[in-house]
Length: 91
Image (cartoon, rainbow, N blue to C red):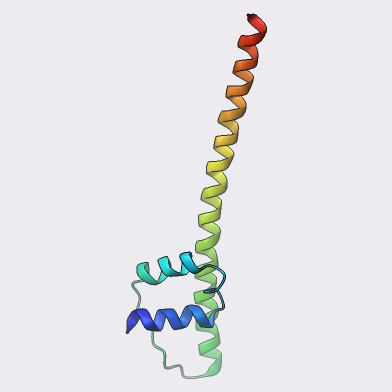
């Protein structure tokens, strides 16, 4: 039941169709239970907005890690190219 509620939450945030694999990970990893019975529509809206913000921050963090690894790979490759050019010039 918990996973189903979280699945419903992700569908309501309109993120499920855009980021299926990340949302699947989020459903499995998310340990918090939440109350689906809200006192007002403002409370419900606020809850879903905070959940959406958590998800977007998770996606952002994931992309930042990927960008950092690609940047490091580019730097290493550029160093290797410049090193190889120096060896060719001295030969």
